[in-house]
Image (cartoon, rainbow, N blue to C red; front, side):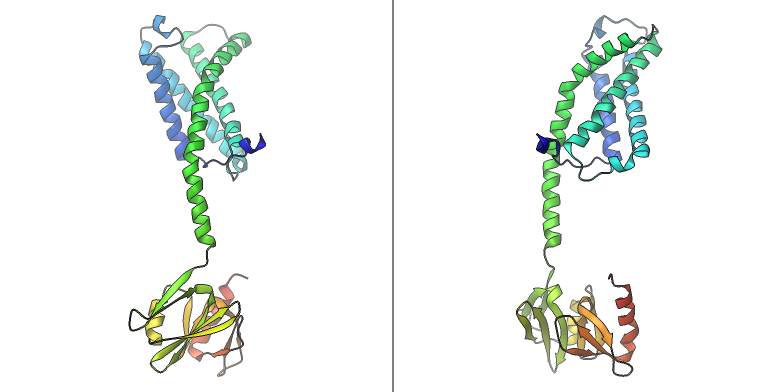
Length: 279
């Protein structure tokens, strides 16, 4: 049984809630005007349809007051994630009772009569009984509508958890190297070629691609790579620390013993990146 209450639902935004309450108010008015249930057909009033429309307005106003009150008095409860079926029911039941109470007060304000606890409870009981089926439909629609949202969220989470890959192209587009971004440590110029150095779980790998360092730098312009030396392009995410002193600065990379020389003009940019990097 507990698994039913823990069924995850797509959280409602304020816009979703207000739109839903507006639709509900209009639906109530249409039902009262077109079908005239609960003795409404025999009800006589000089402004009958305006009076019936007031029920829908009372529901909408009450719903707005309820939502704004809850969002201010219990924001953490309303913003709790994951949002579950149990929380949805816990949110909707007081809302239904509050809206029913608003329509009862509206009826008394418009038609007069005496206010009594018995009269209120009788009205509330009938209204709750007639609300069970519509409420069940709303919850069923919420559960079904949340399935696609949950599937999309699961897919996005899976994609976020997957390591980012990239492909580097040589002068001939048929020449290419695909690897994970995190395992690409640095690229070194070697005459008309570029040496791609990767850190694998079983050691380091070196691949050669016929391409200039400038061309590869352009291909990686939207990634955290920096040309730290005329012959070296480094993945800054894999930099452990900046070592040495001017003019012999070097970069130490994670998982590698190789030291990368650094031009003095790049020292400031490297220090800024390392200082701003999350610990």
